[in-house]
Each structure stands twice: as C-alpha cells, then as structure tokens.
Figure (cartoon, rainbow, N blue to C red):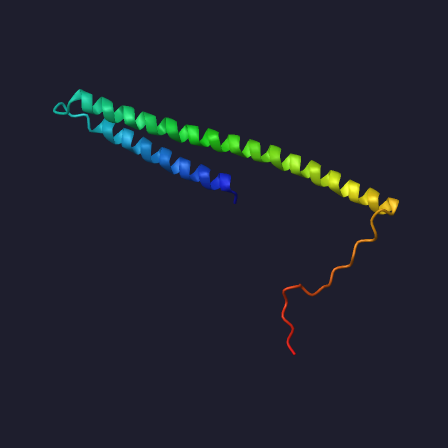
Length: 110
C-alpha cells in the first residue's frame, strides 16, 4: 500500500462526506429557510468538493515529479557504476575491499 492509496482513500472519504452534506441540505429545503443561507451552504460544499479534486490532481503531479527525479537518480547511479568499473579495469582503482560479515556497530561478547 503506497502513499497515493492513502491519499486516494482519504479524498474519497472527504468526497463522500461532502456528497452526504449536499444530499442533507437538498432534503432539508424547507419554506422557512432563507434562500441566501441555502445558497451559501451549497456554494461552500461545492468549493470543498473542488478542493478535494484539486488535491488529487496535485498528488498525481507530485508522483510524476518524483518519478522524473528517480529516473534522473538512476541514470546518475548507472553512470557512476560505469565510471568505477572503467577505473577498476584501467587499474586506476584497486580491487574493491571485501566487507566484513560482522557489522561495524556489532558488540563483541568476551
């Protein structure tokens, strides 16, 4: 489950809540209520629904930017590996050191 899923579910829950409020106001249109109050409430609910849709679009844009950054990082990493391999083959760098199987921060019991 990714971050996008969480944002999507949250936006869907908000959208359903706004729709329930719209239905409640539509069902509660009594002759004693002022039309201006009803219009204000309906407009505020429309604004909330629009904000939710814009949030989803913004998340999609962030994901696209993140994918581009990850692609750039992958290209740079591939180039760095190629440079290192070429240096090792040319003898500029020695063979890579073998790492110890024991982590550096491990405690030894004596």
